[in-house]
Image 1 (tube, rainbow, N blue to C red):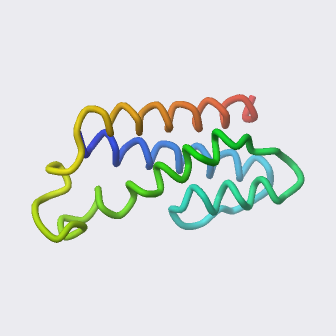
Image 2 (image 1 turned 30 degrees about the vertical axis):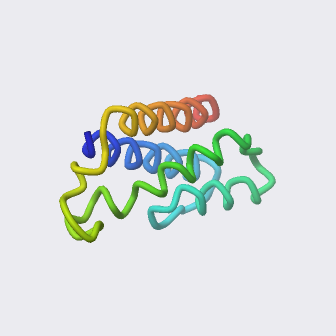
Length: 104
């Protein structure tokens, strides 16, 4: 299930970077929260609070799902189950849907 969490964050990141490119921004890094702040502060697009919240949720999954030493014991898969995977997929779907709505 940790793979679902990891890929959800990455998918949302790619969607935000695509939206940034459309709006004339080169977004760097992996922080969805930071990307959303940049886009929201641009004056070109408003970011709903729900999307910001979901970006923060996925950001919390960024490091621990990628690195085997992200926890003091065990592997990432030991810490993520079905509920976290479903929550991450839902968050990514919302962010991707928001971006798609502005990419067309």
